[in-house]
Image (tube, rainbow, N blue to C red; front, side, top):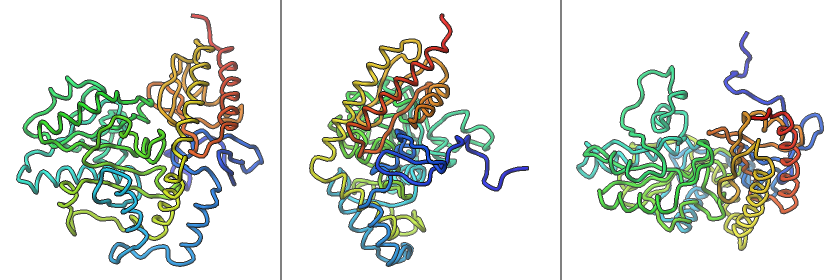
Length: 395
């Protein structure tokens, strides 16, 4: 008999009742160091007082009114995101998949409203992950995720990541834009080459295409800048955000330049919950912390500390790992044994890690992680690697 809660997740037999910072406590009293942060979402960690107080205070006033009315908190959050980014306008939704659906619609609508309705195709990249709606599954292009859900939504062309020749070959009279992740998180924590991103910006300018950036996982401070594309020195025309934007409260956003955003008039797109008072309070509380002096500098420092330790562990256990990769506090180790074995060994040592494509172990701790937390995680990972290495059969 099927369980009341749909069994579509392969859940670990762990449940948590509380947390503090980068640590979680299970219902049976065990402590775990959380280097998954709810899939790169608990940006301020667990039990953050500023975030919790902001949510509680707003909940006592009004949680939801719908977008039939003005929402001052959403207006404030949008203005702060505009002031901190390339964008001129922001649309709020509830998730990364919705943000990416919105970004696709923004791109197509801008083409249609400027007399180029035949240009609706979007170039995406192999190894990408943009969500699990029918549209974002098509943008992702992974046959495993698409199987069994009927005809694939038309309009997406997939090319190898970091391959500019393939991008140019894919551009045709029906091409509207390009959507890229600065770091392919689910695809194995594969960073885009900064030169590749700069060339994508240049080719969009050359052909009149719209450049979309999926920063659902890499944005909101995870790499040490507010948005990961900033490291390459370019700006997109439209961008999706979610995950860490509200520290664990459901919120997504589409940020866009005016020439893209201005075509999304009343009736073209919407969201019942998106940017409601409670979500906006959470988003503003997270921005308070992320934009505070020195915060992102500390993310850079903790990322460097983590990467140095991962590089050492990869060298020390060559039968378990081939390399470390990533940026800031979005890092990974490419595994030789099945990634699940390494993940399970980490959990036995008290470290929560998550997996990603290309048989990788992904590490995405809360952005408030301390130097001591990073040291503790590396020690746990070292012990887990030693445990796994002892079971690896000689080649």
